[in-house]
Image (cartoon, rainbow, N blue to C red; front, side, top):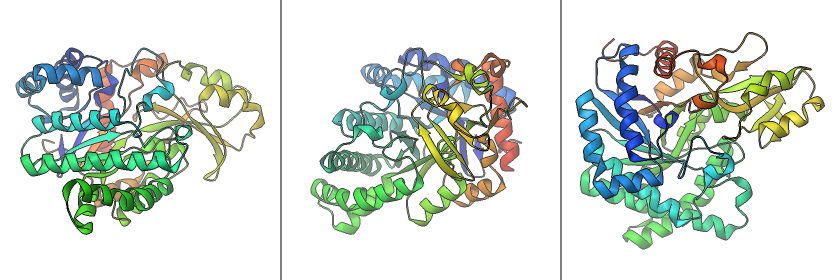
Length: 401
């Protein structure tokens, strides 16, 4: 969906997609229904999640041709990929394995480059592409500067590969590291420091080595093809303003490949806290928790069970923000459970529309583990409600409306 030159989609990681056949089925089934619910008659953009297994199957069969046929029949197009989960993402415990392999490993580099080639086959003429990825690694996994040097080397290799695709095809693809709580990059300050202190100074040398470019030209390659994906849920969990995060990254000359529009769970402690949050505990995903007040974090927990185990320690004036993506159209239960969607306020929309960020993606991947009360609507209708909320809140109407 095109909004004043910006592409809006939802991330298909909400659907089961471990095989390429799963992806084809999801594309045939859901986007046409969602477009109908939204009332959009223009070409409808997609954000795909393609894990390594599905990618290998697509490469073996030139699956982009099959996918293009399905999309052409329904007037769909792809402009962004979620390259964060490498392996399985549904129905099995994911937790910290979602970060593996991380950017220390050539497996992550090679997988991401393969995703870029896949995306280049499908991008419409004149439409740039984006891929979101792991924010370096889970923080506890990094132990030395040597490991960080390997990370930078792999990211620079990826930038060179993206530059090659751009040179050969004219398809410009950006890779966006996606800050997330408890990862090597989890705040705006982390993002700025990694880019300025590691990625640029060390990456320039690697690009020069591979491409024979001068320092300024090598830096331009890095800045053109590497940047950040801003997930509004993740920044809100960190008690950061997504609008301020965008301002600071843009001011530093760092590209934002896309913004993922999402909301986290929000609650204040009380005697019935465990009961209220029981339905949000699951064995599949990691739900990092931050406790604090007035924007200052007092305690951080790696997952919801650890936080609930110490719930009695927190005064009722504390606020908990939980990395559990909840639908944007859900305001809360009226009994203490709220969401961070209020962070997507008029200031946020002004900043988002002012910044050069052409890709917007709704990302509520947790539908299969949401409490029953939040799954009252059929999946396609629930996603359509999120589109309606975004269109209404942003003040931007689609081309056909």
